[in-house]
Length: 528
Image (cartoon, rainbow, N blue to C red; front, side, top):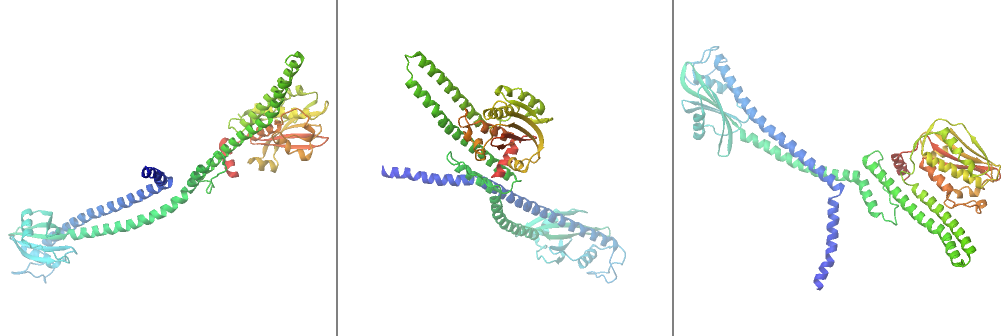
């Protein structure tokens, strides 16, 4: 039992090592490296094989051409006659200069004495079935061996040149048998040209082995270089994999460094980082939603619970009063949950559904809604025309929210103005939005209410953030956070100018065209 238990305990370690090795072999780096090495090996093998095969073919063609050249020289010599009076002959009267040969023996003797064999060639003359002359070149193989003579006589044909291969005693010769006949001489004569084909092929094979050795060295060096280069190319993928392995619900901060932004791997890393940004934002939004819901719903739930406990069920008046109060709290809780859900949705890609919007018609349609918010001096400013690419519903929601805030922090008779204009965005807006064009739609809501203190102007844009003067004002404290989310969804920002006692101006700076999903990916990766 103990040994079996120990064996089972050792298995996970072995399995882990095997899994690690297997993962390494299946990695992108290993696959690219293997493909590179295989391609190099196939290329070197194919080039070497084809090259040396062509060299072998060229060798046979060269031998064929050399034999044909010897035949041509012999024919010219027979037709032209001797080269000069000094030409010697083995016996009898010599040939006449400038006249064709009449004696086959004299013709072949003259040819043998005036022609030098090549490096791998030997010449032999067979006259009436017997070797007459032999001219040995640098290759000292025997042409006058009886077996070769029989092979020549068996293959020889009248008035033709026969070329064939003959192997004997490890020698691979290519023999050219030229039938030499003259009208004035009845003797049978053959000029045999032997070429050491085997020796020349051996040189090619030796060259092939040297090539294979050099190729093996080059393959090893190329593999090392490829290992280094592939490692550099796939390093972002490796870092991407490592970052993905480290990602947990508790740690979504891992990012992949982007070295070469224009490369495919760089774009992959950039989009991967953007995906991580979205995931992290989603988890943050989820946590924040849960935290906000738990925090903000605790008070109304406590109120509901406490009032239900204290309610006198036998007192109709108390029941009705408690019922009205509970309905009011439930309505407030419902508005709070809707605002929280809206903020959670603001991180989704479909939060903004852009369309072409006529700016002036949008201002007029929105202005018709505002007087119902309160008795104020409502005014329409600016004369912006043209069309903007925006989400009409979300923009209306943002403007109405700003106008509702202006009503809460102003008095009857105060001015609340809605306006729009096409303007050149200031540098801080360009820096915050990352836009490439300065042409922005400036959409503002201005009031002459109580204004906001400088120390409160940043806090009011936070969730549940309130100015000191507005703590007694009813609301969830999420209005400006929603406005900010709508502006950012359009690729813009919200800016505030306010002076205590003189009023405030909230301005939405919206680019002429909101960014696409790919633009957000590039911008998100650039921030990392």
